[in-house]
Length: 418
Image (cartoon, rainbow, N blue to C red; front, side, top):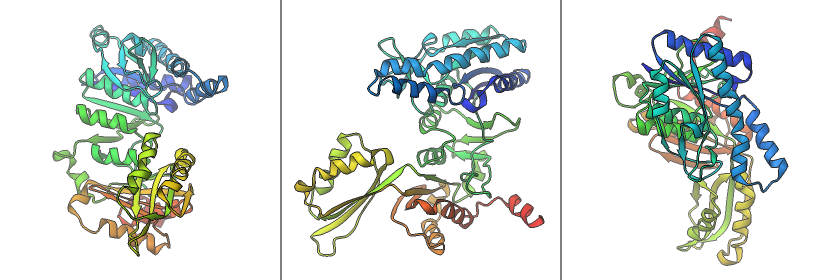
């Protein structure tokens, strides 16, 4: 079997953890598997490098910014190779430009265009372990680029694709993907499997275990993913195709997980003239400013003359969104404009929704029983999302987790015995 093993920042946070990660790599080698390794920067180092670039100048050159922030992975990749050497293995470090991992020129959020697998294949044929710096690549002008948030996961999946790996293991500080955030819901349980579709929804709706881009790439290239703990030697959560015998357990659950995001803000435009073209007049300028709009609700005009329009944007874009819409007041003729950053988006997700009715009603009933008012609702084939006041985040998650039968039975049994 050929594996790509990716170790995140917490997994290589210091020399002791790098050595532990190296031992994990060698366990797979001892089991007869070929392994290639991808590493992130040591925990906290990228944030420190980003802070330095901002301190040097808020309007910095993005090309030089990428040179600075990609340095963290260069340190880790060398240390991992050294750790493997000390354990008696043959290994070689690779930076993104050395392979190369070719990207477009969007510095800070570059997308991978191609990877030359030949150098890494040569490494593996010679019995060496290639240790690759994640997060970085080579742009069309020969400059170092970085891939943005979750970039090392994306690097690992891209390497797994070109190396035709049987699986890509993502090692992190959690032992898999949970039905919801176990820090907020004690009865959350680890999933043995989750479908790509569900994982994409979980990632896009707030779950931070895997980033959307890496899941999309794995789906497109048919790469099996496994999320594992760096600190426990046991299987984690497999991300798999929906079809097939091995996935029937996944399909039996109506709801697989519950995600939440505190990064949204609500905008309400009151007293909007109810005429064709008004929505375009509001959302067009926002799109031109690269302000993404998510949940949208328009109330029915009682007098057929005016209506209210509510939607969400990223919290970071709230002030810009309000300023853009306020500038249109004279043109559109709305009455009031309100912004609210103190909201949370909660989403229930599961492929079982396709064949089961009443999923949304269960959500609404459970929240109503706890006195939680729903401000905005959005649905798709395998997801129902609502917007509620941020103060109800934990209460809403726990209520929904119980309502959909996701609570860990072992946890409940242990509590009863205690």
